[in-house]
Length: 148
Image (cartoon, rainbow, N blue to C red; front, side, top):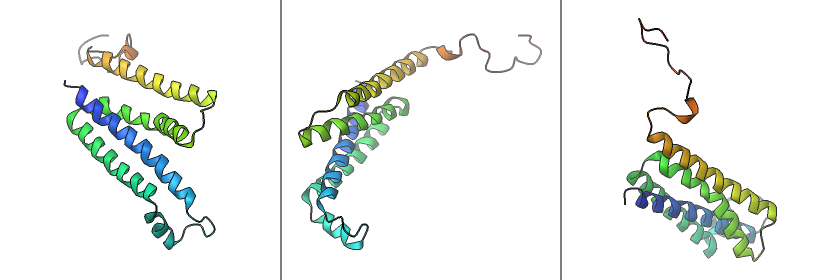
């Protein structure tokens, strides 16, 4: 169970950040837009339960990130935080009742596939003494007195 807990915490953080993004955007669209940035904007947002739920999701995301980083290696948990973007797209489309266009589905698939490839490559590279990307390449000069 060494990698399961940090992965779960990282996924919770990514989901919470995505949810916070969607909720806060939704709340911001409900406040008056006429005056732009103004001091009363914060008061308007504080009266929006959706915005407060978004702020709570930010707190949960921060705690999830801290727990993921405290229980797992940075190389494992940090890439999982990238899932926030596709999750935000999916949550926004679900909350709006809209379907994602095929181009956005392709983008989501690309992010997830790229993440999987990066994690798989990092996993294999961690088990060998040399990186698969540097095979056949000498990354440091030969030791003094040795010929290459």
